[in-house]
Image (cartoon, rainbow, N blue to C red; front, side, top):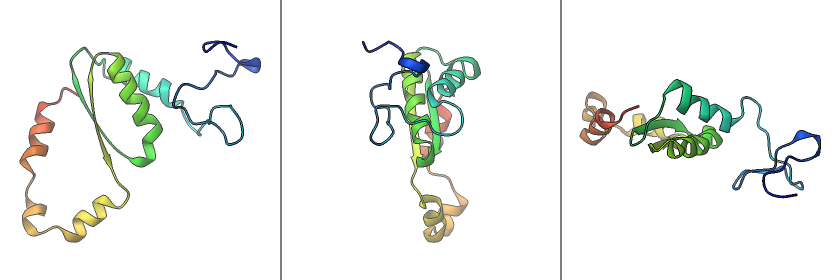
Length: 119
């Protein structure tokens, strides 16, 4: 079978870097929408990402498959993906250790980033 052919039973071959089920060559399918299709929907129909646009994506590590596909889809449309991924416990640790000025203010770099992105 060549790289783009469908497998018997209609299953698509795994993409490069796509996780597979342990002990098989079958792609791992997580519950819920297909991350690649969802990313294409978000970047195409929903956001209409254009060439040169800067797209800020904030999420947690729980969305890693979707984030990878969003990066691919944004790049395919000529945009610049800016992935900002929060580590588990990061927010809780911030508020546990933040001082009054951290809670009352906003970092200038973060504000500049938000003001500078297109989507």
